[in-house]
Image 1 (spheres, one colour):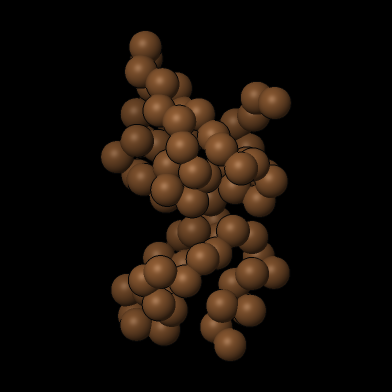
Image 2: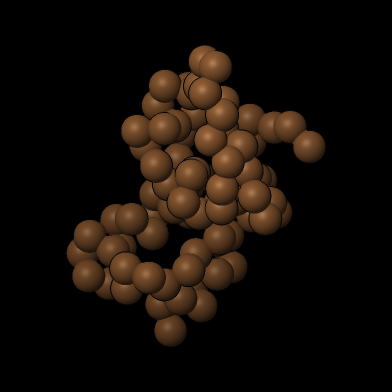
Amino acid sequence: MATHDVDLALAWADRVAVLVGSLVRQGPPEKLLGDDTLLTPARLRRPRVLSVAARLRARGVLGQETPVRDEPSLPAALG
């Protein structure tokens, strides 16, 4: 499936591919879709839930290695 819906890709895909010019990067959605240096030139934005998780991590509310893939997993990660 091909999509520009990064929220859908994060929630449903096991692996993603991000195209930037002739470069193709493949890997886990949490890693690639959380990498702004990859997303910006691809004209994609970070998924909303990863943006919220990054802010919570920066404030020490959420652990660095706590997995977050979709909106229901965010409250579960907070305890």
